[in-house]
Amino acid sequence: MNAVSCPECEAQIELDAGTDAGEIIVCPDCGVDLEVTSIDPAAVQLAPMEQEDWGE
Image (spheres, one colour):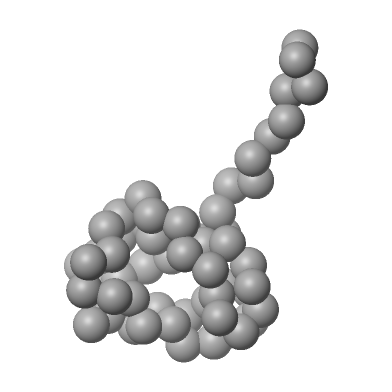
C-alpha cells in the first residue's frame, strides 16, 4: 500500500491496492475531495471543483 499526505490537513492516507490514477478519494480527517495523480510514486492533489453551467 502507498501512503500520501493530504494537502489540506497533512493527514496520512493509505491508498488501497486497487486505487488508480485519476480516482477521487476523500480525506478521512478533513473530508476534502482529492484526486489521485500518481500511483508510483503515490501522489494526490485537491480535486477540481465541479462547475455548474446552469443550462448556459
